[in-house]
Image: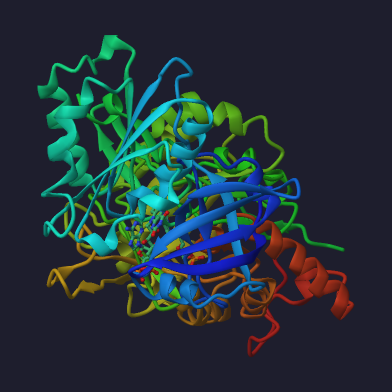
Length: 263
Length: 313
Ligand SMILES: Cc1cc2nc3c(=O)[nH]c(=O)nc-3n(C[C@H](O)[C@H](O)[C@H](O)COP(=O)(O)OP(=O)(O)OC[C@H]3O[C@@H](n4cnc5c(N)ncnc54)[C@H](O)[C@@H]3O)c2cc1C
Ligand SMILES: Cc1cc2nc3c(=O)[nH]c(=O)nc-3n(C[C@H](O)[C@H](O)[C@H](O)COP(=O)(O)O)c2cc1C
Ligand code: FES
């Protein structure tokens, strides 16, 4: 693996402060899969210094070339710089990195749970699952309606249920409040969002009697985030403290099985 | 082209590197991750993550914040402890052609001595690097802040080992030359300059310090001019080989360190920017030398010093 140059194919603002960027970089796209990520340089020189971790949001094949997209929110100076790139600009990045989702071929009903921009990493999983003939429900929560991932950008087979903190669309409250209704339907759960969301999922799973237990074979997979230095497992910046000891988001994750994080 | 360097020309055992590019402690894990990514055996040496007597979990999140052309870390010496290093990791190092230097950290002089004792004679370990930027629990002061304490640690380690001993100095001092002289006197074979510079940032939304631990150490390009001056001052005053470290991202940066008197260099934070940075710097040094028509790297060492350095190695 080395620092690669990626060609920006397109960039558009898809909703409030959220940008979609398609990239051409075959060596990185090759090993990419749902839940894995890339480290993207967001500047021309040495400032900002550190590359930004970004999940694979989507894949497509154009004239037999595998291409990928990232979906990102403008937060600080790195993503601000990124949002000013245009088609035919070049970016420096490296990857693919980390451990992605693992979908059991037997699992038929997939429940995807997204908090905020956690949805970025779940869309490609939904694409794959629909293509494989599975049933997919996406529970997505956001601060407000303008920050929800537009349902029309998903395969139409995906059932989308939305919640907003301010009640501007859908259920008013957190996405995890709806979980209990869906847990017994689900053969497998895939979640990405802020850490408090994972705590709420843990509470729901424990209280559900949904059969999402150790022995059921049903899996709950969490995609976690921490500030990163290297993205490659060498700086120990992205540690998570688990019952079995310290793990690294970039190397041991970002996908963790529920039981690796919660007792 | 002559790139070979000896970091312990006067030691009981030599530490000869094929070339002067090393990885910096804490920025390359224990080498195992990158061994799968590129040919790390082409590097001059690998330096391990800081190793302590017992395993350490490290500090709470966040452990890293970015700053202008740099970053601050407070990893808190997360590591698996010396026993696991000797049992599980050193046997892998022993199969590599590239020498591995183990960076050690302690809370007392006895800790350092015991670590040195554990690591002496272990196959796969070619040298020790003492991280003296750790607080001595007895006094609360960093070992490396005081020439006498730094010398005491160095002496205690030298007595326990036949391995070459590098002492990694902290910039958190008034007079780095005094510390450098004291540790060389106490048996250090070479000096690594420098460790991170104490630093912090404030999260203005939360109105508190951004790092989970509070403060941390500054690294990256922002650190380079500070480190370079310290290398220059020490090189002018001390004969032992110096390993320059701080903010190196390119071959040009490394050449600056050589000209300031460094015999070798370590690449740290640059590896986060570009995983292949250490090899890129090595290749760039080769390209620079051939472009300049220089056959022997030693011709560059100390070129910018007021009086040329005696060639080491
Ligand atoms: C595995 C992983 C996958 C991610 N995938 C996506 C994605 O698909 N889309 C998306 O919008 N965001 C994603 N993020 C978060 C994204 O990396 C941050 O939003 C981004 O780094 C912010 O950079 P900035 O320059 O705008 O912010 P600044 O605040 O200027 O960044 C300063 C530093 O903090 C780090 N940082 C800030 N916020 C975060 C955060 N939430 N997580 C990790 N590091 C952070 C930056 O990387 C940088 O080193 C992901 C994070 C991780 C760990
Ligand atoms: C994430 C991180 C972890 C580090 N861990 C250690 C360590 O365990 N022991 C040590 O002596 N130095 C450690 N350092 C300091 C580096 O080895 C180096 O001295 C410093 O970062 C300056 O070099 P750079 O600017 O090239 O990174 C660490 C630095 C970073 C950024
Ligand atoms: S980001 Fe460096 S170890 Fe994970």
